[in-house]
Length: 117
Length: 158
View 1 (cartoon, each protein chain N blue to C red):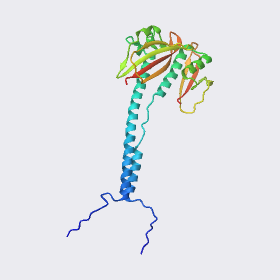
View 2 (cartoon, one colour):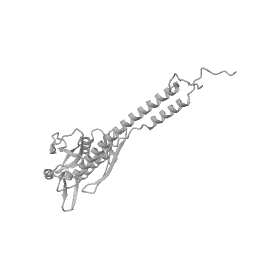
View 3 (tube, rainbow over the protein chains, first blue to last red):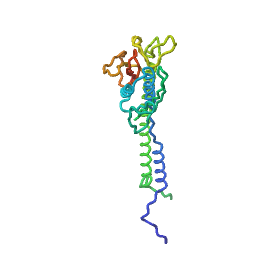
View 4 (cartoon, each protein chain N blue to C red):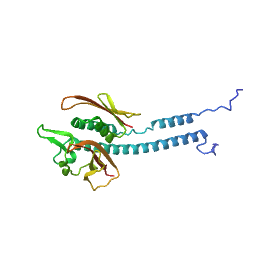
């Protein structure tokens, strides 16, 4: 005479299938990713600064002022690899660079980093 | 003599099957609810993207091009000697030629500017149409040789 283990817990076939179906249904749920053009806008704005600076040949103070007016505290600027405006980004950032020549063909390298967060 | 068995417990007599049925129904409900939310989010994303795209493109065209028929699509200075358009350099003489613009439910509600260091905002174009779904874009330009920020506000019909 075999003893049956009355204390055991066993899933029946129907329960197993139900749990599997339920798990599959949960796996199919996905949230649509939101498409945003924020990055494009930031690139355009940074290029606006470089374009205007190519015409006006600003001083370092003017560069800092213009950048703050447009980006607030979300941007940092380097001129000839010297940081004149420093702000730390904790997330993604967009960088724009340009080498501008003035009337005397003196080169100045501009780098603008803008935070996307 | 036929023996008729009456099942007094009904059709569904297994406790497991009841649990199974409830789990499957609950799963389908969650699935349908999630799909409904996803669809609504997707539609909203498409509308938001459409508004962003049109506003960005109109603002970019305004400060990068020259359009003699509608300055909203280009208000830049034209260098006749070099035969080219000067990007990001606008002239206030073109501001009197701003006309309405509508593309598939999108319309430009307002265009304004303010000179740097000055809080006073000058509105150069305004539409009477109302909408709560709007987006404003800020661009950096020169207006008559002076640094300024241009604001272009685009909306879509609700």
